Length: 114
Length: 114
Image 1 (cartoon, chains in turn purple, blue):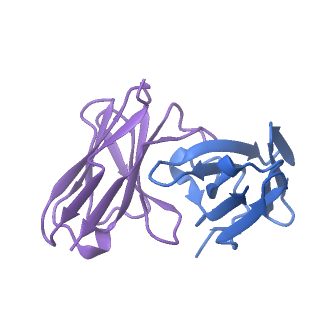
Image 2: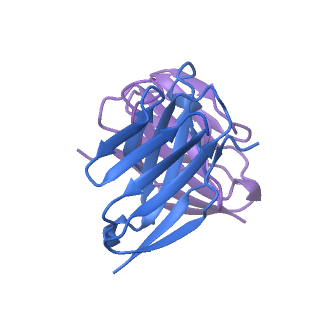
Image 3: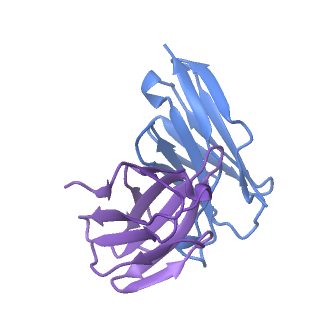
């Protein structure tokens, strides 16, 4: 039982390049989330999904796209990376959409855009 | 506009003593509060939560207190252990909004000295 895993752990991009971050969970959770964490900031929600085939925008969605083709996977795409997207990205999942539902986080992907 | 504020970026305590981490919020609609702990190079992990219908919740060495009139909550760790050294995030949610509406504070870095 690996919980939530993220691939890759680290990545350096040049401005304008594209990449996809992969999140996988083996807990059969319906709900999945992508956050970013910047220095001195809390986690901010980028996009989320309430089930296979569904996605929705969070607080800071601009410059990102997501897909949830399989229940266990949630992909975050950057079509044209910008230095402002340098951040640590965390994926999370939860069994419920209730406000108090525990979110289980992956270890994070540290992305640097030059 | 920060809705969840952790005004102390860092806190240092001696092993065996009490650690008190504080969190203030501005949105009176928040009715569920959570604390997450984060070690370096790992994702946040859920620690303890409290609903607005309670003013205290205890789990082993961890107790969260909620003062709704002051819009303030605190996390008490007694006794503090070196393994508690981590960044602690306070998070709040409006029960009507769902888990995707979780708002995080900027975090407080706790250091417990042996």
